[in-house]
Amino acid sequence: MSLTESILKSCIHELNVCQHLYTKFDPTNADWRPQANMRSTVELLQYLSYIGIATAKHFVNPPEDREAAREQYREQAKWSVEAVTFENASEMIELEKDALRNLFSTITDDDLQRTTYHMFSNQEMSLFEALTNAVMKYLCAYRMQLFLYAKMCGAEINTRNNWYGMDSQRPAPVPETVAAVA
Image (cartoon, rainbow, N blue to C red; front, side, top):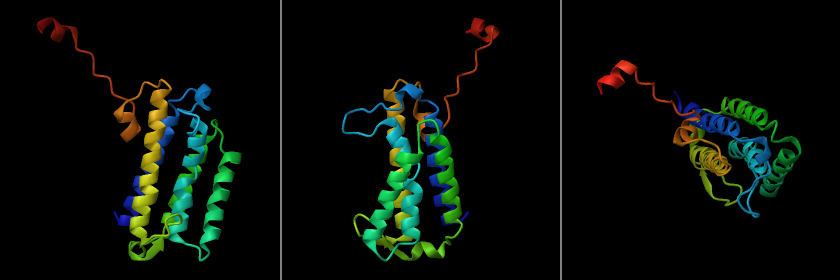
């Protein structure tokens, strides 16, 4: 597996886990937020539906005009508010995964060595560093936030749900003959 494929695989995994965690929410918690100055559940899902592809596109094809790049980012944010609802969030994340697959299919491992810049810090870095330290880590961080929101909303989930997007496996029942001997 190439480095590019490995980065993509990690990003897709994070979004898969987000889709799994989404299923743990009761729809009545769509507008729930831990505090007034924090995103609601649906706002977090809206953000997750575009942040991976928006930042990845920026790093792969950085625009010459940095203010234009910031404006594109703001347009993506506005789009997500208008297009992503609690009910369609998983479908929208699926579209993001498809967009990431398409974008990453244009990246070679050699491309990972070229320089790009971060749109907010204006720091220059390799494409590899940008895709791992920004895109992949952003998705990981916001996946963790979604997990915490689900827990705070009463979802019966644990570490396995958070890291692997899987429900806990219940231990197999002990057969009566073994239980009687013990």
